Image 1 (cartoon, rainbow, N blue to C red):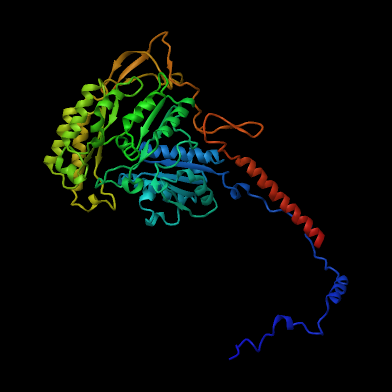
Image 2 (cartoon, rainbow, N blue to C red):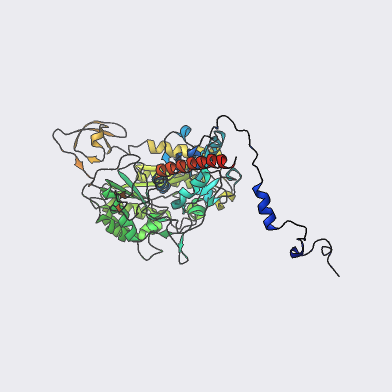
Length: 529
C-alpha cells in the first residue's frame, strides 16, 4: 500500500522543471540588483563591556569556615587556589561577589550558623558555593537546593566550581578520590594555600576514621580512614619550613589511627617529621582516640619528650561511664583512658592532656554523669571541651531516648563550674603583644600572676630566638607557588609548577577581543549597508 506522502512530494531530483531559471539566468539577474540604503543613526554607541561579569576569576570572594583544624586546613587550600587563579579574597562579606561557606556538621549550632549564612547571602544577591561536612553528608537537604557544592575530597577543583557559580550555573562535586580502587586521603598536599597564620602550617595526615560512633555525623562526610603517604607529608612539612613557618600542626579526625590502611603508624611518621624540624620550630600533634594510642604509648612518650615537639596530646574521653561509652560505641572503657593519661603524665614531665566531654548523651543517668565529674576532679584537665549533646540527623543516637533539655543544660553548667574552680593556666606566660616578638622565643622575667596566667617582661639584652629558617610569607600571600621568570620558565622549591593563572592578562585579552569584535561589526555594517 503506497504511503500517504507518496502522492504529495516527488523525488527531489524531479522538482526542477524546464520553466525554472538556469544558474546562468540567476547570475545575470543578480548583477541588476541595487542595494537599498538603510537610514543610519548619527552616532553608533557601542555597548559597554562588563568584563568583570563575563570572565570568571576577576571577582571578590569572602570565605567563612566553621569547625575543626582539618576544616580550616581545607579552607586555606581553597583560598590559595582561588587567589592563584586570579580571584581576590576579601575579609569584607559586603564587598564580595561570592560567598564560599565551609561548614561543620559536628553540632546543631554550627549548622544553624551555616544555614543562616546561606540565607543572608541569598538575601544580599550574592553568589554562593558551599563546602565542608554539612553538604557532603546531606547534599539533598531542602535549603541546599540549587546551590553549588564542593565535596571534602574535591577541594582541588574549587576553582572550577566557583567559575561555574559566577556564571550562574549550579555544580556539585561530591565524589571520592581513588587510585586503583583504593580510597585516597584527599586532595594533593602541594596545592597553593593561604595560611590564616603565616607562621603555622596545618597538615591533615589522614581523613576519615575507623570508628562508628553513634552520635557522629562527621563520619557520614569524611568516611573511612585514608592516610597520606609518609613521604608526601614530610615533603609538605619541608616546604612549609622553607616558607618561614615555625609551627606545624598535625590534624585529622583521628591522628592515632594514621597509617593503619597503608602499612605504617603514627610514631613512624612523627620520627620522620622530627628530622625536618629546624631549631626553634615546633610540632604539635592533634586529636587521637584512646584505642589507637594505647599500643604506641612507649614510642609516643619518647616523641612527646623531644625538644621540638610540644608536650601536648588531645585525647577525647567523652564520658567516664562505661555504660555510656558502650552506647556511644567508643570501643574503649574509662580504664583505658586512665591508662593513657597516667602513662603519659608519668613519662612526659609537664605534659598537657586535653579532652572532650559530652553532657547529656541519651541514656546518661545522674550516676553516669557523676563518674565523669569525678574524672575531671581527679585529673584537673587544663584544656577541657565541654559539649552539650545535640542529636544529629541520620545518626543512631538521634533515635535513642533523649535526656531532657533542662537536664543537659544543668549538667553542662555543673561541669563548666568545676573546670573554672581550679587554675589550669597558672603556667601560661603572657608577654607584651609586640610585632617583633611574633614567631620568636624570648626570655622573660615573671612579674605578675593571675587566676589563669602569669605575666612576663622581656629580659634586658636578651636576644629573641628566630625559629623560621626563611622570612614568613605575608598575611594573605599564597603558599606553594613557584615564580615565573621573564622567559616564561618556572622556578622554585615546590613541585606545584606554575599554577598561577594571570586573570588580569585574561581580562585584558578578553577586552581586546570584545573591542575587535565590535570594530569588525562596524566594518561589516559599512560594507553591506
